[in-house]
Image (cartoon, rainbow, N blue to C red; front, side, top):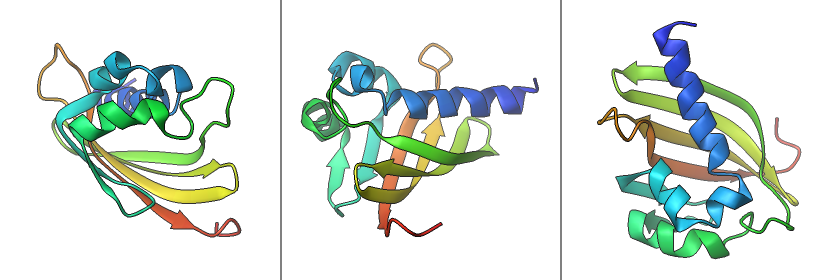
Amino acid sequence: MTQESGELAAAIAGELSLMDPAVRSSRTETARLLDPEFTEVGASGRRYTYAETLAELPDHPGSSPTGPRYEPSAITGVVLAPGLIHLTYTTTFTCHRAHRTSLWRKQDPRTGWRMYYHQATPIPLDTP
């Protein structure tokens, strides 16, 4: 495995972890994976800060261990620069789909890869 493929694998693992209800419902686990400068534009169009995400994610859909889960597909990534990875993929959640994009950065080897930015764009269910 090359360094680049190992970095991509680490970012993808982090992305998948953030869809796991056990992580989503834990502020500690979420904080471990989000960059302190994190921002998001959700599928609703709402903008979220790091603090808002930590406070609200445990109550968002997909955070309950007994509820529906986000189903990702077609995850791809590219290393944009040392310490910066761009991921794209599609999710299905109940009867909703979205194209998603995330930027992951690694500024400190002790903290590892952390999500810096995330955006979701809703798409019709029948869109490839």
